[in-house]
Length: 475
Image (tube, rainbow, N blue to C red):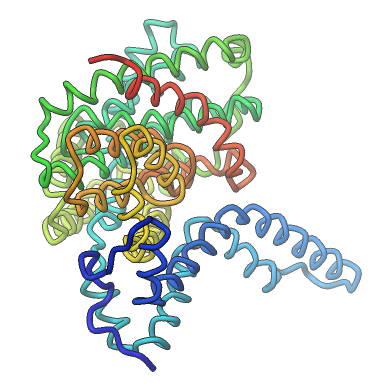
């Protein structure tokens, strides 16, 4: 059994060679486990693409189990094999499952002490914890009602039709992410799209186009400020970027891209969007409006105000887990005391999303050995393209964080890597931290699992528009 003096090895402790390939080969020679960790991460990514197959397999196994029970005259029960396959088909648990494999491999390589030190002391779980809390708060009945009321006024300008709601949500909610954080904006947008759009059962093409547009718009919509988007947060302090800088260099371009992409999709699907006005909504059993004790009471203004204050506290202390988790515990007591106004507090989805992100940061923390030299070896245009591509397979906050470790980046290169990271944030579920929240809230409209290919195709056009806005539009 080997021993690692420091794990993961600091990037400046790796050797550098002439070419990029030589550098990577030399680093693997010095630290063979780096390649093992990357191989496990690659398998986890492949698993996310195969999740829908596991879900379909689970259904077939359960159907066979039910048929067998009927033939034998028995009461149908859940199949253990089907439940296990369904578990493997849950995208939110994939990276956590492969984190177990990673921990086992690290333990074999370096011992349990190295594993516990990495998982407990090295990995930073602040972002996953924050997403759990902000999702739970943003999905409460008073907050959703407040957001819905505000967007209803905007949608009312267009007659309050599904098309008007669709346009208002996809333009305004992502921009709101620059102020209440992207995870909160994604949660509110997904909940409202479910109510005002997906419940009408649009076509598969429009459903995936909307999902891809939502993910891209949220990814770039958080760039109006320096404190709300995870990939911007990673660089704002090291590179001394503030909100005026973000508005001048990123914000107006992002806003233009959101408007252009949403308009393009509206024009492409305008006939179907208009037809949705005549289609009855399908009852959403996952969003009950009644409690066991009867109808919920209207939400008083003071309850909404306190919810907003809890939301503000969480956003203001986003980098301090002890403060925002403590605030959330106080919120749980308040929600219990005002249960007649609250509805059912949803915790399962936020916890699953937090688990997903925790697994992602565990794996992502071991990928710097190859991502950092790749970023450092590229020109400005190539760096933008590489950051966009790499973001599809890594959380974009990881890409920008690793860029801060490269001392040779000029101002143009710094802008290029952030632009690429947010541009590619809608191509896959793992590309941007809020995406798992959107998928978890909307997956029931996609037969329980979002197709990676469907999402990629839906996000392709808005990604191209964002790329043009960031790289082709002159200052």
